[in-house]
Amino acid sequence: MALIVQKYGGTSVANPERIRNVARRVARYKAMGHQVVVVVSAMSGETNRLIALAKEIMPDPDPRELDVMLSTGEQVTIGMTALALSELGIKAKSYTGAQVRILTDDAHTKARILDIDQHNLKKDLDDGYVCVVAGFQGVDANGNITTLGRGGSDTTGVALAAALGADECQIYTDVDGVYTTDPRVVPEARRLEKITFEEMLELASQGSKVLQIRSVEFAGKYKVKLRVLSSFEEEGDGTLITFEENEGNMEDPIISGIAFNRDEAKVTVAGVPDKPGIAYQILGPVADANIDVDMIIQNVGADGTTDFTFTVHKNEMNKALSILRDKVQGHIQAREISGDDKIAKVSVVGVGMRSHVGIASQMFRTLAEEGINIQMISTSEIKIAVVIEEKYMELAVRVLHKAFALDDA
Ligand code: ADP
Ligand code: ASP
Ligand code: MG
Image (cartoon, rainbow, N blue to C red; front, side):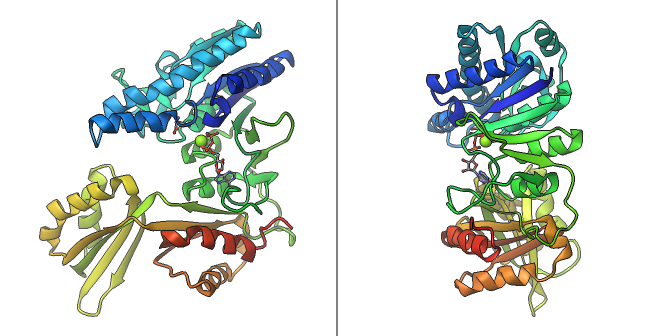
């Protein structure tokens, strides 16, 4: 007997028939003698619909109230899933995040899980129930409903698996595993049988939406056995996220995958005096406003001034611009503050990069041959990321996928 956490994403619970399908799979696992915790997302499109509704009332919705609205999407699907299980004669009980007590911090719309009370779930599991838990939501220390950021049900699934000491966490979605890149953009993409945790972390952080980054962080920290599978197929091993790396086999690909992200925007502070403390004076107020900064570059001009550029989430570009214009520009005597949200980031990822040189130059050459200009570059031991004009993103991903021999033969 094993304890298994199964997470089903929005397309997998998009209508009653698919929810019945989820229930049938859960029933099969129960019949094998396993204990099962099910985590569900809202029906696909529902979270977007709720955000749009909130914006009709208030263009920049108050985050506490937005979370109250967003959490309803998952509340519907837990009830439906528990009903579908009951219809199959399986004892099931639904739980909202607050009912489990998934305790989070109070950063509404992007809260982090601090603690999970596994007491009630354990008792129900021991009594033969399937526990159906709402993904994406929790509650802060004061009882306010919080949500975990887009794609956050993955994190609920993995965090529950960690808290319960589950034998495996299965993420069921609309593709049958993790691919070399998004198969919707590059039809030639290949499914990976396995991928290292470190690579998955990098792909997720660079924008591969198949797993939310925090779910991968949890899996790494608590060594959760994590697998991505299709909810539309009966069989298949999906992709296992492994903790061991292969012994640098010559046959192994150097690049494992390509990620892309159109969610970032570029903010440039031009013509600032090139002197100590400037980076802090620019980024300090941005961090104080709880805005995450990703890439950063600083160019040195010949006249003793410098241009400072960084990227933030598109949704936060205007907030970052107004903070800089109101609180920073006059103070540091910057010539101009500007934003550009027509950018995209494309990243190649692979642990094989550690032992190979020339990956960056191959990447840059491939992009140059297509006339694609690189605006920013950032590297880590296993990743090279570039910012380019958004309209070239899909082209860039396709040519790089081919250049690094990832295309399905
Ligand atoms: P869910 O609603 O099940 O959480 P998501 O839409 O969040 O599903 O994630 C699955 C989607 O992730 C796929 O449909 C695919 O378009 C996209 N995706 C992006 N990168 C990859 C990748 N490397 N491998 C597989 N899918 C990917
Ligand atoms: N429903 C949430 C979203 O659409 C959470 C999730 O699907 O993981 O982002
Ligand atoms: Mg998702």
